[in-house]
Length: 292
Image (cartoon, rainbow, N blue to C red):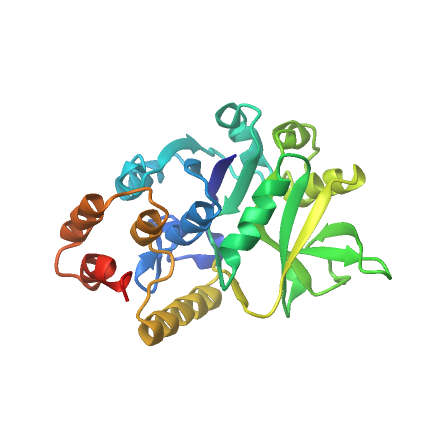
């Protein structure tokens, strides 16, 4: 299975913050936003990842992320010249995926909770056939793709930004697909918004009886950090947890070290690279922390 990380778009909801930079490079407390979905893909066990961004922002992502070898990953890049919907990412990634199953993560989604790696592993295991969509309970479902259930709680549809939401369960920006997803996306017609909707891809799998819903209830936090209030909320959430627990969230060096992707020497080199910053000191202390 391969990962696709969508970091394109115009970031219009965050202007003027995004007038000169990609929203996915903005800070969420002490790390760039893009680190959060990237490490979600890492926790799912994915090491081959395609980063999709705009032509003007691509150099900044290459400077920040490189080729991924510092984390034991293989990162490649592709460009989204015009934003035409989330499902467009599957078409852009088609050559990279080469028929393999995939996990598509949106660059402005922040997800955290106990047991997340196990939930991701289950979705990955089911990804050889069909699709898995993650959903989270929200107060303003009309802003998202919303899951519709029948009287018995079975999924019967997913609606994109409905004015009268059929439930409070929003499909978040994390999707697992089998190898058919790019072909399904390529066969879509643009919606009334002029976009290729990811909900249409999900509904195509549902029509085939091959859509799996993974509910993330209490104990999980999810932020769509594409608006100013949500960005600030996410930063405060990360700050509080990190300061109280003394452990970082979405630290790719730590995850790579714990998963055995990099050795102690590579971790020490990363710590030296960041010098006498809080981040560098945290990385330098990691081998000792793991012994506690």
